[in-house]
Length: 404
Image (cartoon, rainbow, N blue to C red; front, top):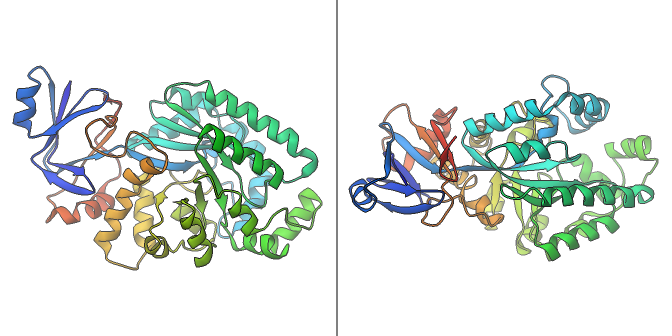
C-alpha cells in the first residue's frame, strides 16, 4: 500500500487540499493523511512538494505513432499539399520509424502525464511497442479502402490486424478506426461498424477535417477531384456526409477533427451519442480551421483534446496541446476553459471509452500524474489554468499504482 500526499488533489473536477490517496493497483481510500496512516500503518508515504497537484493520469485519445519519424519532411499550411507530401514520403517515413523511435515517443507522452493513449494503426507496425509500453493503449486498427475492387482484400487485412490486437491481453484494448468518409467504401464500412457493435469495441473515425473533404463529399468537386483522378482513377465520391454519419447511428463513435462540420451535423452527432477528438495544433498546421467548441458545449457534446501524430504536429506533449487550445479558443472565460480542457483529458475520455480511470475515486485504477506549480496559486479556481501555462513535464507518473 502507498499513500501519496500532495498539496492539492483534482477530484470531481475541483481542487481540494488536506487530502491524501491510499492505493495499490487501485485507489483504496481518499482521506486526510492522518486518517490514512492510522488505517494503513505499514503503507509507504510519498509526500508531494509544496504547490504539488495530483491529477488522474491523462488520456490522449488520438495519436499516430507510425509517423513518428517526421520532423521537417512533410509540408504544412494547407491540407492538400500536406496530403500530397504524405503520399510522396509515406514509405520512407514509415520505414524509418522503428520500435525504438516509437517507444521514445511513448516515453515522451508519459513525461507529460499521459497514462493511456489511443493509437491509430494503419499498418499494425506499432503493436509490439504498444504491448511493451507501461501505458494502457486503445489500439485502433484502421480500415481504409474506397475502391470496390480492392475493398475485400483491405478488409481482410484489417480483420487480421484486429485479431492480432485481440490477443495482446492486459494493457492493449482492441478497437476499430475508420480512416475517413472519402477513403472507405460503404460496404466494408458497414461490416466494420457491425463488428464494433456486436463485439462492443471502441470505434473512431476521421470526419470533415478539411474544406476539400466537404467539397468532395458534397459535389465530387474541389481539390480532392484531381487527387482521386490521379491515384484512384475515379471522379465520384463513394458516399455522402449524411450517409457516412448515418452509418454510425447505433454505435457511439469518437469522431476526429470535425472542423468543417456544420451546426446541423454536430447536432445530429450529439443526438446519436457521439463524441469528438479535438486536435488544435494539427488543425492549425494543416490549415483546416477552428473547431467551434462553444457549439459542442451548447450541445452538451463530449469532446477530448488529443495530439494527433507527428505527421501533423511537433510533439506528443499533452501540455503543448492544451496551451494551443487555450490560445485558439478565445470565446468565454479563460479559467472555465482551462478547467474544461483538464476534464477533457481525464474523466471525459474515460467515460467515452468506458475506462476504469480518469478520476481520483475509490475503485478506479491508480493512474496518476503529479505536477508541481512554480509558485503558489492565488486560488484553487486558477490551478487548472496555471497548470496548463507552466507545466512542461510532470514530476511523477503512476500506472496501476506503479511509479514509472
